Amino acid sequence: QTTMLSVQDTQRSFLPDGSYVLTAIDKNDEYFGDLGTRFDVMTVEGDYFASQRALTRVGTVLGESTYVVPTVGDSFSSWANAFKEACTSGSVGLAVHLDAEGFVSDRSEYYVALKSWLASGGRRFRKDIIWVDDDDPQRGISVTKMAAELKSVNIAVGGKVLPDASHAVDAMDEVRTACDSMTELPGGRAVPYTYKFLSWETFKIIQKEMFVSVGLCLVAVLVITTALIAHPLTSLLVFVCVFMTVVDILGCMNMWGLAIDSVSVIQLVISVGLSVDYAAHVGHNFMTQAGTRSQRVVSTLGDVGAAVLCGGISTF
Image (cartoon, rainbow, N blue to C red; front, top):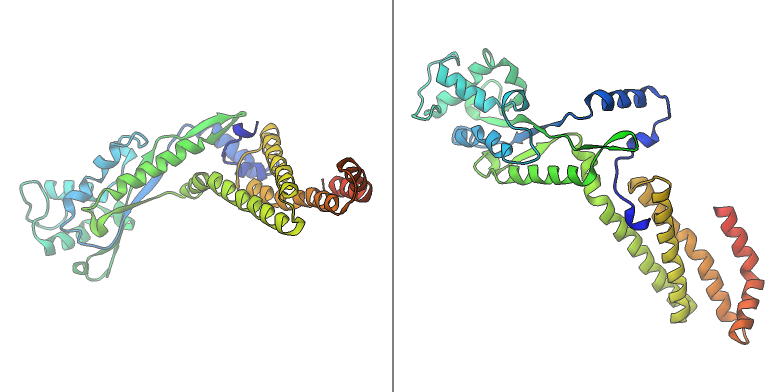
């Protein structure tokens, strides 16, 4: 059971049954659960005139990813491609000189024509481009964005539509790798973003963080009990008890339908501190008793057995 525990999106588990938000999510899953995820590809300040060709190749590079919807039609929105088409068709509102490939050949004409086009035929892209100075296009562009779409990463889990954590992480990483490879863009790379990356970033690190956090707690238990009990074998037995408690909790989590998330990791770390007390008290008391091992066990249970049992029951 422990090895079957997985990372999942558990946000809806915190919503009350029958709530407006949960009902809306369920309806969205029912009718739109197979749709992909829109994401923005942002470019930073740089020489946009010199990067005209690279800007129009963004869709081609993204389209090579197995996780991205083909960058044609409504699935991809690019001001750079639309502006190039407008220049070729002569609909930018100004006369511009083009090279053999259809790109603007004069730097000053490029920025002036782009500004003019955004105020006329390219109005729908106005919010996609932020100028360094709105009144002086020759100072260049600060930030721009394009939009593409990831294929659906959702799967059905227990009658609910949830993102496949490993698939979502792979999609996010591949898109980031593709954007990092666009070194000819202004600033040397592009930055992909969608609000869902916040959850997917958690999927990526939460399992590793769980192992690291719990592992450090277990190491601390072994070191401190060895120093205080002053007997390596007894300290090791205390460590084994705590370790097996953690393993048991992980197995029960899977049986209860829970998953690895921020809340469960926090509670798991706390459980190490809660469980070490019982084994440590028994081990420490055993070391203070005299007689044979059997006699020391009986004396230990007589001294702290009831207290440890009551503490465990009340804590549970």
